[in-house]
Image 1 (cartoon, helix red, strand yellow):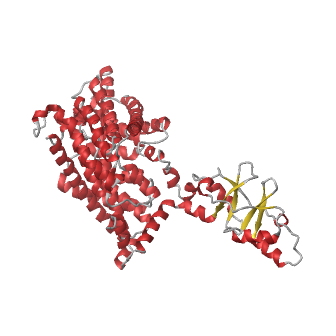
Image 2 (tube, rainbow, N blue to C red; image 1 turned 135 degrees about the vertical axis):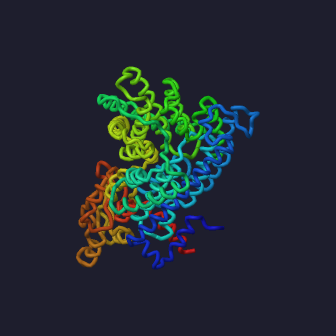
Image 3 (cartoon, helix red, strand yellow; image 1 turned 90 degrees about the vertical axis):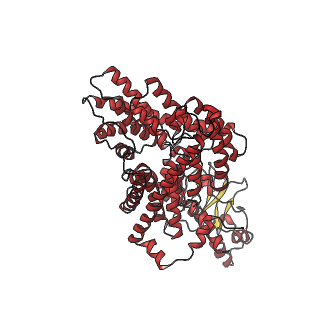
Length: 603
C-alpha cells in the first residue's frame, strides 16, 4: 500500500541537510521560503481563476452566467433556462466524491480550517488540500455555487506554505508564519491587493503583528502580486465611476449605514449556520452524494434568481452603478444570504468573503437609494453607499476592521471613500460585537468546541479551558485506614503514583499514604502495629470540575507524581491527576502529529 502524501513529507523531512538548517534557522532562510511560497501561491491563484472560468464556461456556456441573466446555455439550447438546475448537480457529482475521498478539509469556506491549523495544529495542513480545494471550489463555483473564490485561495496558499515548511522541517513558530504567507499571497494575487493580503493574514490567521512574521508575509504578498499582475493585468478589481461626498453631514448617514449593514453581516453569519444545521438534519444519505442531491435545491434558487450563479461580481458592479431598483437590491441581498448558505450547507466548497462584499453592496446601495431619495441635493450617489457597505458588511461578519478598510481601497482605487469607509467599518465592527459573540469564521470552530482566543493565549489559555475530568486517570485502589503497613506496602508499591488514598469504614477519603513513609516504617522494627492511618498525609486535592490552570497551582510543591481528584463534597476519591496528563493537555494536536512521524520512522 502506498504512503499517504502527509506521510511522505514526514519521511523526507527526517533527513536534514545544511541547506535545510539554513532555511530552518536563519532570517535569510525565512526570506527565501517566503519568496517561494509567494511565487507558488501567485501561480496557484492564476491557475485557480482559470479553472473557475473554464468550468463556468463548460457548465453554463458563459464566462460568468450571473452577468448573462436568463441567457441560454449554447451547449444545451434545448434545455432553455432549466440547465441551471442541472449544472450544480453535475458539478456536485464530481467534487462530492473528490472531497470525501481525498481531503474532507476542502469542504466549506476554508478560512476557519486555516485558522484552526495555525492555532491548534502548529500550522500543519495536509498537502493534498492544495489540489483538492482548487478543483472542488472551481467546480462548485463553475456549476453555480454562490460562493467566493477568496476563501479557497487562502486555503490553497496556506496548504502550499505548510507543505513547504514541513518539507524543510522548520520549527512550528516559523511554520505558522509560512501558512500566513500562503494566505496573504493568495489574497494579494486574487484581488490584486498586495497591502490587504498581509493584513488579512495577520489580522485573521496569525492574529498578531510581530515584526518577523509581518516582514515575511509582506514579501510573499508582493511576490504573488507581481506574478498575478504579469498574468492578469494591473487594473483595479472593480471598474467604478468616481464618487464624492456632497456635504459633511453625510458622515452621520455613513455611521448609520455601519449599523444597518454591519447588522446584515451578523445576520448572514447566523443564516449561514442555521441553514447548514438544517441541511445536516435533513440529509440521511452518503456524504459524497450530498452536493449532487442538494444541487437540485440550489438549482431551483438559480432558476428564480440567476444573479446568484457563481461569485457574482458583475452583478455587484451593476448594483453600485445604479442598475437596480430598491426592491431588487433587497431581494438580491437576501437571495445571496440564502444561496451562499445553501451552497455551503449541501457540502459545497467556496468562500464567504465575496458573498459578504456582495451583501454589503446590495444593502449599502439600497440604503443609499433611500437616503438620496429623502435628501437628493445633500447626499452622494447611492453607489457610494454601496461601496462603503461592502466594507461594513465584511467587518460585521468578520470583525477584521483593518482588512476591510484596506481591501476596499485597493479593490476600488478610490481614495475619496477612505474617511467614510473607516467610520462605517468601525461602527459595523462595534455593532457586530454587541449582536454576536462570534464571527463568521470563529463560529464554525466554536461549534466544534475550539476556542481560538484560548488557543492564541498559549499554554495558559489552553489549560484554562480543559477540565480535570477530561484528563484525570483512574484512582489506584484505596486502602482501609486500619490496614497494617505490611499489608499496605504491596498496594503502595504497585501504584504508579508512589502513594495510595486512605478511606475509612464508610468509604470516605481520609488522606494518602506514600511509598516513602511505608519504606521508613518497615525499616523500623518497632512499627509492627502501625496502620496506614498513622502515616496519613493530606496532599492538596482538586475536583473534577476545576480547570487544569487551577489544578496546576495545587500540584506545585507536591512531592508525588500527582494529586487525588475528589468529589464536590471532598470525601470521595474519583481519580488521579498526574503531571504527565497536564503536559499532554498543553499540546494535544502536536503530540498526535509527532506520534505519526514516529510511526513513519519505524517503517
